[in-house]
Amino acid sequence: MLDFTSSSEQQETETRHGQFALRDLLNGIFYYRRLALIVAGSIIGLGILVALLLPPSYSAEARLLPLSAGIYDMQDAGRAPLPGQVLDPGAVANVELQMLDSLELHRDVVRAQLGPAASPAEINAALEKFQSHLHVTKANEANVIQLTYTARDPQQAADALRQLIRRYFESRATVLTSGRVAFLEQQRNAIKRQLDEASARITAYQQQNGIVDIAAQVAGAVAQDDLLRKSKLESDAELADGRRSLSSLSSQAKSVPADIRLYNDNTEAARALGEMQAQLLGLQAKRADLASRFMATSPQVTQLDKQIAALQATITQQKSRARRWPARRRAAPNWRGNSASRGRGWRNSMRSATG
Image (cartoon, rainbow, N blue to C red; front, top):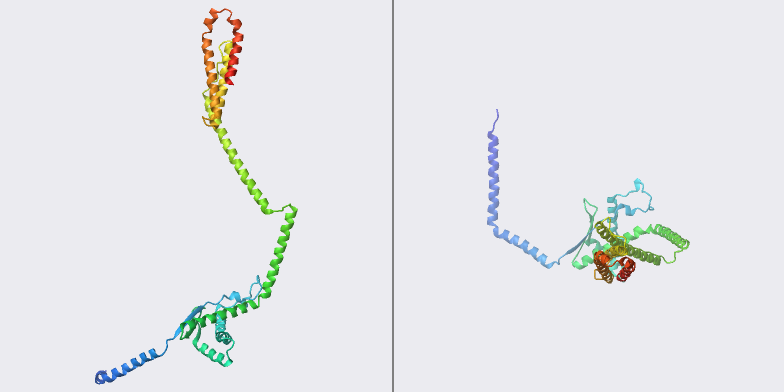
């Protein structure tokens, strides 16, 4: 059988005690409210007075990223590091953190600030003050070093931190280059020997091939290339003109019949008329060729047009005479005897017309 009477009475007693304590506290605050306000105002006023009387403090901050582990490898180039010699980035960050927090580095900064006339006592006092205002820490989850320097003057804080970082960079450069001077000098001498050998080979090649001035020869080759290009363009233009003339002549040749009747009988007049017609065809072909290359108003084309017109007029005149030939034959029985002299006259007139 379970008894719940004692437990319920105990809970009621605890509730009464809790309510009584809270009521007593509120009653005490109410009765002593003036004293509480005086104490709170005094504390706030004292804080404001201290804040007004004390000068403000400024801090300068900087973050540095350590170098990679491979830069601290002092081995020769081209040789792979051993597995045990590979540096951990965290260890490198710790080393640089110790360098930034070293006493010698801080002493160099203080000496630079005070000047060469400062006494050892002044240097030690300034060194203790400098170290008390400087805080060097490392980020928890990154290899980043954080520096903080506090001072009454913001410019003084920034200058001190800037000078510390500059001295740190100088000391780190000294550490990195101290073991590599000999290696760099060796590499410099090797590269110098390679350059000398290359220069000697170039000189020997120039002497063997008769090269005096490479720049002049290159300029001459470029000028010759330009000349050849211009000649090629001119040849291409002439070739295009020739092709156009050939196409024009081909189109004109298609309209010429395969059989051309030059004369109807064996008389001297008909033979001379056939020669004039053949010469007219030659002049027309020559005119077509010139028209494909020159303008219609050029002297060559106009002179040839005059010759063609004169020859056509002569042919027309001779044709008209040939039509009247049967009537003249019946009227003059001795015409056959004089036909040779007349044919020679026609040929002379044809020659004078063609120039």
